[in-house]
Amino acid sequence: MKKLPLLALGCFFLFVSCGTVTMERSLAKDSYSFKQDPAKKVLLIAITGDENNRRSVENDMKAKLIERIPDVQTSYNVIKSGESIDKLMDFIQKNKFTHIITMRLASVQKEIELKPGAYIKTDYYSSFPVYYRDYGVYLDKTWESVYQPETVDEHIQYTLETNVYSLKDQGLVYSALTSSFKGSGFDKTIYATLSTVRKDMKKAGLFK
Image (tube, rainbow, N blue to C red):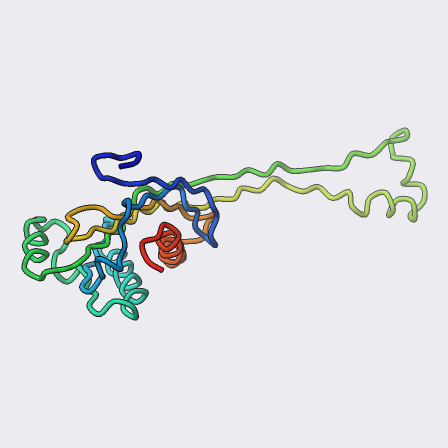
C-alpha cells in the first residue's frame, strides 16, 4: 500500500496545464485495471448544487462515455436535490452497476487581476518640452507616449473533484482534483476535465 493505506492508493501529484484545465492532483488504486474489472454498467452522479448544471454535467459525461461503455445512466432522473440519499442507494443496489463516477463542484472563486496604468515621461524645457518647437521631433517623441489606463480583469475559477468507484472492488479506484484556467467558463471546464481525467487515468495504468 502507498500513501493512503485505508484506500490502498498510490498517489500521483501532477501540476500540468491541459487546455483550459489544470490537474492539481490525482490518485489511482495500486494494481487496479479496468481490464480485470470492465466498466459495463456505469452510473453518473454530478454534485453541483444546481439541477440545471447537474443535468448538463451528467449529459456531457454520458456523451463522452457512451461510445466505450455499453450501459451509461444518469442519476438526475432518479433523485432530485433535497430527496433522501437512501433512494439513490436503493437504486444502485437494485440495478447492479459495475462502476459509479461522481463529479463534484468543489469550489468557485472569483479572481481579480489589476494591471496598473503606464505613462512615458519626457523632459520639459521652460513651460513646454523642447521637442514642441518642431512637429517632426514632437511626433517622434510622443508617438508611443500614450497613457495606458489601469485595467481590471475578473474571472471565475472552478475546481472539480472527479471520483471513480468500483462496485466489485467495493471502493474508490481513482480520484482527481482539477481547476479551470483563467475565465474558461463552466462548460469548457467540464469538457476539458473529462479529457484530462481520461488521459491521467490512462497514464496511471487503469486502461490502455
